[in-house]
Each structure stands twice: as structure tokens, then as C-alpha cells.
Image 1 (tube, one colour):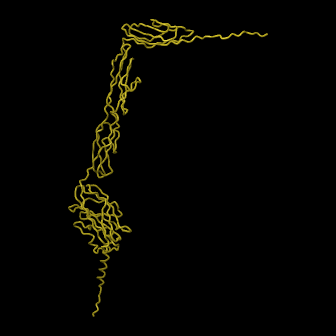
Image 2 (cartoon, one colour; image 1 turned 90 degrees about the horizontal axis):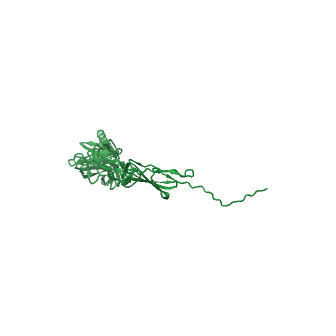
Image 3 (cartoon, helix red, strand yellow; image 1 turned 135 degrees about the horizontal axis):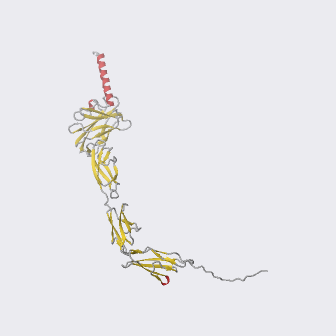
Amino acid sequence: MTNKRYFFSPLKSSLALGIMVLMASILMSYSGQPPVSKTGAPGETSCMICHDAPNPDYGGIISIEGLPDEIIGDQTYSLTLKAISTAERPVRGGFELVVLDTSFYNAGSFALTDLANTNFQAANGRDYVGHKDAQPFGNSDTITWHFDWTAPPYPTVVNFYAASVLANGLSGNKGDNVITYVDTHTVAEPLVMEVVIDNVSEPFCYGGSNGTAHATVLNGMQPYSYEWSTGDTLSWVYTLTAGTYGVTVTDANGEIATQDVTIGQPDEIIANITASSLIIPCGDSVVLHATASGGTGPLYFSWNTGVQAVDSIIVKQSGYYCVSVLDSNQCAVNTCVGVNADQNGVFCNGITADTLTCNHPSRTLFSGVTANDTITYSWSGPNNFTSNDTFPQVTQGGVYTLTATIPNGCSCTSSFEVIEEKELSVEITELQPTTCAY
């Protein structure tokens, strides 16, 4: 038998050791972040290129949560990618994800929301999101990563390609397993930002300035900035008069939407007074009737004579008569009319007289009758008292009535009660004799 002896060249040994160190260094660096273009998407390889001796005991699946059944173009979605162990639990894991359209071009964009655990890379016109440091499974069967993805701003079909390494933690390329993920979604037409003006209210009163309006934004990205044609910069405006107003809204993405609104107002309250006559006939009266329209709800009438809640009054004296009309919003309008007495009439303006006393057993009745013609006086009183004097003398208390008449037949009547003091009387009930004492 020939004994074989193997000799190792120092050069070859050093080369082999260097390769082993290099491979370990590469694999260690991949645990920090994945190499690009290893998702298994069309035109790419997968992590299997490096991890060439898979461990079938490390079974698992990838899931992506946060995508609706219908993806809306240009909308941002907060996604959670999970690497889930379904067999023997690995030590740690990482991932890489790319989203492509049907022409295998990049679709949408990523935004990192967890900088401690996720990383963004771009290569060959494609964007990738992946792990920043491989995460340990620990006592869980699932590790997760969080990030945002914004859909393309046009209708299309997109495919999500992901790969995850379920690693044994030995920093080599043996004994790990690679799982992949492919999912197809339809992206719908982007929603157009629009403004709806709601909570519109008109001013309480005609010509008022307390109308309101509110702008609600649909399909935009907060925060929003508002610019009303009034100069207001909030979603609400509160001091609107009747008219047309516009609002321009700009969202966080710079999208702009405009909308107009027309603010109405209640009908103007219109009030009017009609009179049966603007001249009060001698000894008679006239009827004033108020009419009104417009406003809100039932209308309420209030006269300056103190009469309330009626639309008509009867007046017997000259004067300026006004009515205030009030609606249910407390909006008011006033209107007035002047009424004069017949200049050819006779007017009784009252009677005066002093009190009858012991020292003044007779008093004169004074009347305030006025007329533009000759006045005939006719007095009557207690105990069949009568007189045609202008200023008669009376000696008894009681009610005296004057009827004043002018030649055209007009007359007026006035009454007054004369007060008479009672006489002092003394009644002797008993006489006592006078007794003298000596």
C-alpha cells in the first residue's frame, strides 16, 4: 500500500481563508440591509443566490397588511409586512420589497415610518424597501416592519414582490431558508380633491350680516389651507351678508380645489298703514289699519299708542301714529302716518273747577273748548242744573256735563265732577248742671 500524503500550499490556504472571511463579511453586511434586486421580481434574482443550502425546517410565509380591496391612485397606505414562521422557529429574519406595474417598471413610492428598522434603496430604476437590521424572532413566530406606500397617480395593475430570509443566526449562507411573496392589485383612478360647502345659513334679517358657511374637503391630504373671497382663512365663515362667495382650498400635496356658495336672506319686511281718513271728522274717529309682508314666520304688530298684537286701531285725536312689525327672528321695521282733526270741528279739551267750601260756596266751571266758529254751550248737572253760560257758577257738588256745538252741527261733550266739602255739625247729647262749691 502506498501512503498518500497531502500537502497544503500556504498560498492556497490563505486564499481559502480570505474567501471565507469575505463571504462572512458580505453575509454580515446583508444582515444590516439586503442587497438590491433580490426580490425574485422579473429581471431579478432572489436571496437564494446567496443562501444556497436552504433549511426546509424553516417554513414560513410573508403577508402584507394595510392594502384595501381597491387601491385608489395617488393615495398613501400605511403597510405592515410580516415574516411568519410556520415550522421550526428561525433565529432572525429580514426582507426586501419592490412594487412594479405590468411593464415591470417601478410603481408608486415608499416612505419610511420606522427609521430604526427599515431602509430605502434604489437601483436600476426601481425602489426597494427592506430591513435595516435583521430582527430576532425571539419568542414570537412573527416579525414585522412598517412603512408607507403611495400608489401611482393613474389607473394600472401593480404587483408586490417580496423576499424574506429566515436565518439561523450563524452569519453563514447555509441552513437558512428564503420565502417569497407575489400579490397583484388593481389601482383605480385617483380621487379628485373637492370642496363641499355645507352648514349654510342665511342672515336672520334682510340686510343682515350673520350668515354662515363651512367648507368640507373630500379626498385631500391634510392639513388644508383655506382662502375665502371674504379674506377669512378658516373652514368656517360667520359674518356673511346675502351674496355669492368663493373658497379655495390647498392640501398638503399642493392640490387645489375651489367652490362657490350663494347666501340668501329673508324677504324684506314691508309695512304700510292705511287710514279710513287722514282727517278726523268733528266728534268722530278714524280707523288705522296696518299691513305687512316678508320676514320670517308670523308677524307681530305693536302700536305707539300701547296697543299690541292687533293690526288695526281707532284714533280720535290728531297725532303721529306708528306701528312696529316684528318677525320670529326679532327683525323689525317701523312705519308711521299722521292724522289731523277737522279744522272746522269743535273740540272739548276738559273742564276744571275748584272745590266748594264753607268759605267758597260757589265755584266757576271753566271749559277748554276750541273751535273756528261760534260756540254754543249747554251745561247740565245735579238737581236739574242747566246753563248756557260759557263759564257758569255752581253751588252744589256733583258731575257737570258740557255739550259744545258750532253752527255746522259739530259738537263735543265733556264732563267733570265738582267736589263739595261737608259742613261741620255739632250734636249735643247731654247737659250737665253747674255746681258751685262754697
